[in-house]
Image (cartoon, rainbow, N blue to C red; front, side, top):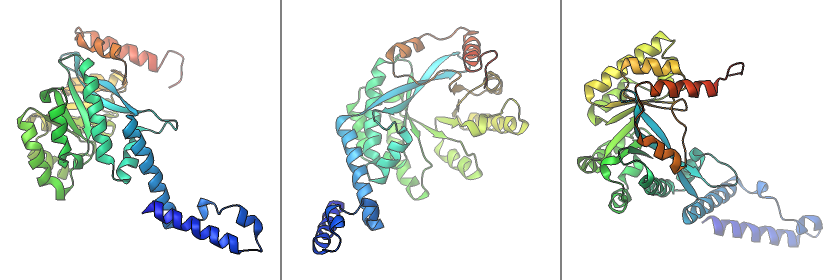
Length: 313
C-alpha cells in the first residue's frame, strides 16, 4: 500500500531526526522525496497518478473534438473521428493522459468515459455521419462495453470502434468472441494499418475490418515517391478484395489528395481537409455535401492558408 509505505517512511525519518542531536538542521527539515528509496518513490508517483486520474474521472474533465472524414468520391463528409480533449493546467496531450491511466490500472475507465462523452456530443452531429471512437482491443473485452451500448442514444449502426493497438495473440480469440455479437447488431470496426506487414495482412484477412486506416508512413510522398505510390496502390486493391473501406488519415497536401483520389482510396481526413473542432457550429456545416469542385477548392484554400505566398513552410 503506497500510503502506508509513505507513512512508515516519514515516521522513521522523524524518529531518526529526533534522536540525531548532532544534526539539528536536518531534524528540522525532512529529507527530500528525491532521497527516498527508488521503490518507495515509484509507489508515490503511482499514488499521485492514481489521484490525478481519479479526479479527472470524477469531475469529467474531458470533452470531445470531432474531425471530419471526407468521402473522396462523394465529395462530402461521411463520418467523423472523435478525439478527446482534456481540461488540465499542465496541457498534457491526450496520449499522455491515456498512458498514465493505463499505468495505474484505470485505462479502461478513462476510455469508457471518453466514449460516453463522445456519444453524448454526437447527438449534435448531422444524423448521416458515422462516428469513429478510439478504443484499445483489451477494453473491448471489458463487459462494461456492452453496458455502454445499452445506455447511450447513439445508434450502434453509426458507431465505428477504431482499435488503437494491435490485438495481442493471446487475446485474439477472446476479442473475436466479444466483438462478433456487436458486429451482428450493426457495429463496425476500423484498424490502423500504419505498419503493413505479412502478419498484419494475414490477420486482416480473418478479421475483415470495415475500415482500414492508412497513416502518414504510408501516404507521405505518395505523389512523389514511386515506392510509396506502389504500396498505396497495393493496399487499395487489398482493401477492395476483402471488402474494407480504405481511409487515408493525415492528408496534408493537395498532391497527396489528388493521387489518393486517383488510386481509388475511399475516404480521407487530415488538416488539409478539416481540423478537429469542439464547436457544434462547425459540425453543422458538415451536413451539406460538397459540389464536384468543392473538395478541390477546400483543399486549395487550406493549402494556401498553410503555405501563404512569400511565407515559409
